Length: 520
Image (tube, rainbow, N blue to C red; front, side, top):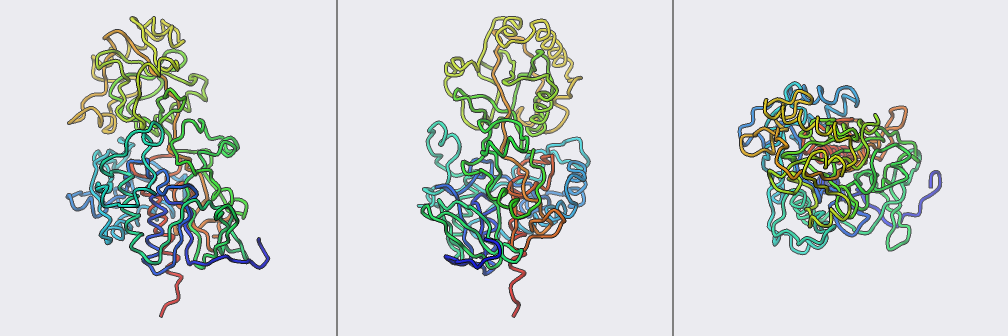
């Protein structure tokens, strides 16, 4: 379609690909800025992976934090972010995120449907310069289901509903509340139109600029001209086995918890027109507890137990922030020390269920895990070693060494408990996560690697404009979220970083398109 006249089916000012939190922020900004905006969602529900999520956003020095007396400074936040991210991504992109997060939230809170509160959540690198034990994290206020009305029918439900048929929650919270509030705000905008079951296929390029897209409408190609630009905020490619293999993304589709439409077409189509990409082997990682159906789900909040490798030995701080822990799992596997599934070993002091607060999808009856081979039990540590296929003497020595650390109150191997996040799930006041393994019978639960989505994508500048390999922007094409190479590079600075970053760069993209409007 390059170089030939285009037979457009319709026109708008801004075309947004995807309907997660960031995409909807970009659509809202464009519509409020006077631009006729169309959102195209490939699936039958709005919300993307955000609808499954905690809905938090890591946005230093924003108004919600200031309302509770937070004394953070942007200089401190920048020092922390730099210490964690380093030079892996452009300073221009890092600064665009840091400098505009509070401004983006100010824009959102001008809308009566959007309300945010502080949810204290420690920064994920607690020993880095200017890390904050209370974090820089906010989330949407809960939303009464009745407020949403018929929009509830087009809001993607949480994973427990989709995967095991759990009942719909009686109140919308976290990512559900964020998407719900954004849908309400967009419903009030006459310049915004949201379309389901309209998968994106290709960008249209004329004279080197993206001037629109081809989507599928009722199974047929449909060409939409976008006079001001196209925003790709359609998630990553975590559900695309071919792309995962091509770019060497560890793990499998069965371990991802990304939305069902996340096949990466917006990224692949960008590459086809000359867009540069980065971080394509990366994802937002986590340990994943294995369920009877063979799928691993993003898991956090470990209140006991230790992870052991194929030698029956610990290989990481089990209470570390989930992305950091996920990277240790990948490293141990690459080093040949770990095979999947690997095992969490724990005792009966708190019951027979694994000490995991948030397995994403609730645990079902234990018998199903036993039948699948994902739960093991024995009266002795040596007997448990035989059940999980590791050397008995090494597992016994590992547990004895661990118990010694618990008695001493210090993990000399991996410093478990040494950061605020390590203690976050241990009750009020943040108790020690050093819980001994002494009370038989002894148990093991199977784990694998999980991801929240890939984080490699189209490389952008600080205005969210997609770049070619030579660093020049492709006119008319913007990217945000997991369709964009993450501003945070190979790290995950704090809870809410993916959604917060997606919202900021979507807002910046809309702002750039609005700025291009003729001035009176």
